View 1 (cartoon, one colour):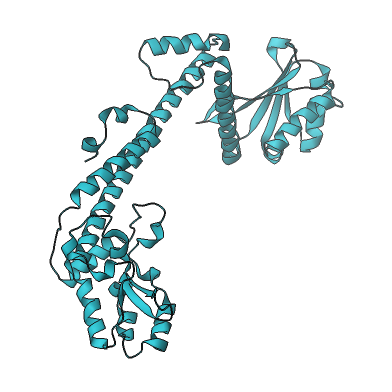
View 2 (tube, one colour; view 1 turned 180 degrees about the vertical axis):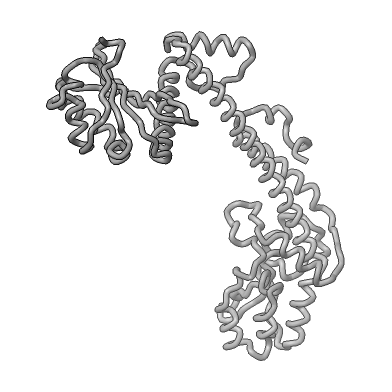
Amino acid sequence: MCSGDVQPQLYDSMNIDLIREEYEEAQNRSLEGQCSSMLMTSDSNENEEQLYNAIERLQDLGGENSESTTLGDEKFDEVWLKHMENHYSQQMPINYIRQSHELRSWLQYIPSENDPSKRRLRCRICWRFYDILRLQRRYRSQFADDTGFEIDQAREKNLRRLNAHSISAGHKAVIQELVKSEIKRLEWEFIDAQRKTDLENFALKATSRMFRTVFAEVRANIPLQSHHLIVDLQKINGIRLGTHFFNKYGAKRIIENISLKMKQTLIQELKSKLFPFSFILDTSDAGYHYLSVLIQSIERERPVVYFYKLIKLGTDETGKGLFEALTKELIDDDLLDHTKLNLVGVATDGAMSFRGHKNGLVGHLKRLLGKNIFTIHCLAHR
């Protein structure tokens, strides 16, 4: 349906608004051409009810007056019934109107222009759409006029008029054309949703490729300054990588994102498994002073080592300073209680700031835990 109304090249565009605008224009042109003839169906109440159910969610083609187009009886003002009881109790079939969902879905009770104290009746649906849809004039009812028709003094005559309009050719033709426009709207919603899904899938695939690229660069120790070269190579090879993260700053953001997710996964696993673990600690002074923290634990009945965190140190690199820096990170990650329960050992170099039993990091840890733990002097540092 859509391929015949919208220029094919628009489907290659990423601009959803452009596609929507072109489609809506084509839809309006099609509607104007199709509404020159009447399409009639059976007069059965079942078909009538199906029509009303089908357009329950109808939206106004005109835009501004969208509230006036739904066919539910929520548009019928209960105050009208009270006014009828006070002024037209003998002329209007009030109980019939009160009980008829179908009648209340289109009936309007409007003031008379010549005498505001008097009221007139019109069809809200036909008044709003009959002329817009350009239906045949011979089927147009007085109910479609701005002024509607004046209430007759004979109750039976008013009842016959209301019932006759419900099953009239003009009224049913308006409903059928609105049903067609609603079907078109639903088709467009489906196309729009499918298009958005395709765009989201493309964006997800492109972003996933870029994440894998950066992850591989980190694992291969490729510097971030060379990231754009790897990206250019893949684009030459026909790999679609989207439109973002082409420079080293974008790669840095991806690395930070991946590392945060890996740290969250590690913390979750540690807290859920409750396996004993140990710290492997070392310091670095490559420009800045850092405390490197690795965790050794058990996974699938085998010892494994995880990188936990690189903690930037301040000016205090004493045992107490190292202890406070480490415990602060454990508190931030909600791992302090887990550490007290499951930490069994610490491996460090031979520096007294680490191994000192009184003022070293190990000494402070033992007092925090309230128990003895294994302390290992790293063989590589001996």
